[in-house]
Image 1 (spheres, rainbow, N blue to C red):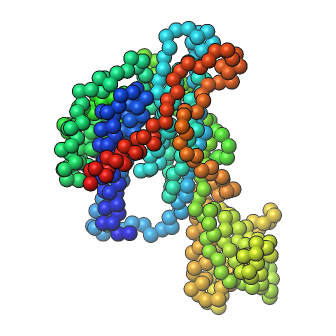
Image 2: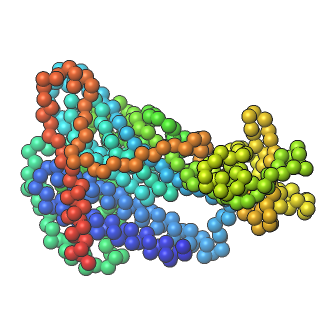
Image 3: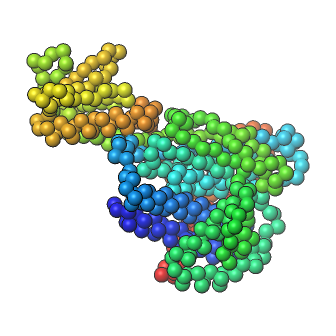
Amino acid sequence: MNDNTQDEEVLQHIEREVRMREGTCKLLAACSQREQALEASKSLLTCNARILALLSQLQRMRKVQILQSVGRRASEDLVPCTGKVALSDLRIPLMWKDSEYFKNKGELHRCAVFCLIQCGTQIHDTDLVMVDRTLTDICFEDTVIFSEVSPGFQLRVELYSSCVVEDFSPGAIGSWRVSRLGGSLGCSSGKKIRAAFESAAVCASISSGGDARPGSVPPPLSPDLLTLGPKYNLLAHTTLRIEHVREGFKTHDLSLSATEDSPFWLPLYGSMCCRLVAQPLCMIQPVISGQIKVKLEEDFNYSESVYGVLKRQTLLCYQSQEDLASEDNPMLVIPIRKDTLICMPESDPAHCQNIYINTERQGEDVTYVLTTHTPEDTQRWRMALCQHVYNMSHWKQCCDNLMRIEMPSSRRSATVKQGSLYHEIATPSSPRKHTVVPDLSTDVQTLLSTYYKESY
């Protein structure tokens, strides 16, 4: 893919998010219920985050293009493969005062919360959860999957909160006019993207508790956006990396971004629990296969012609390709791990079609010799083996075993039941009175889809 095609693809993504943002603003202005406004405001914040991430990516791409134009080429060294990263079963414990939780005293403080999860330019938001003192944990049942992620990924989790106003009225949204968006649809893409960037930057700064960039001038749309609908504020955040990937549930520290005097504040413990797994591409599909000869270095007089398949942490050797198709057990399994050495004898032209694999098997160092039929096959196998070892060395513990990723389920029709085991057992006669937030994602998608058709 050339540079112009990449630029055009990113610009199309930005244009799509700009239209999504405009449609969300229209929807937010038309909301007549509190739950609808909360859901639409969440979508608006997500759109702003995606626009900023895409613009950052475009800036990095342009920088690389400039360096290449002046003769500084990108490195041709090996690049590790990409993979999938999945975060699921996210739980954030709360620490209410005894008088609030056990004695049910004090003013009832309710907030609408959700998580924004970002890895590169891929950004997902969780379902909305209503939180009050009847809950001991905030539970997000979403499974968020990021594709084409490098082993150097940084997965940022941000928890946003909005204080729920009981006396909500449509007039609270009110001074903003839908008609003001109409003119923007006729503008050029460049003006729309610039306006979206400036207002998205302002909104993102306010959501995170900061100020707008000095010297920046918001477009005419920004002041309305700043007073439009419920406001979400950053409550806590953390960044997860490859060293945090493990099977099972793990606890991670949260950095708090709000104080107790904030209206959107919740009593967080300062930690979160989740399941973070990864599937490198080299662990999902076979790397290379073909007819080769294999022999041990100690016995050069004997070699075995096999059909080899490089897959995960092994080079599987079958008697024939038919044995592979019939799923028979391989006749030989050669371990290929992160510390396996792959080399060729440069000073021996007679053996230029040999590849030496030094690895550990059953606690002992063993060297295997692979022989191919042509020098081209030798080069192909050598590059595949070196790349595979390089991939595993960068994905580290993610290549010890193939981790299972559960596919995300469809959006639920109602919010997952929240609470604690104590609350359910200690007060069985007390019905839960807080309002269940309906799932509006289908309605949002339908309205936005209709809006897109009208815009073209």
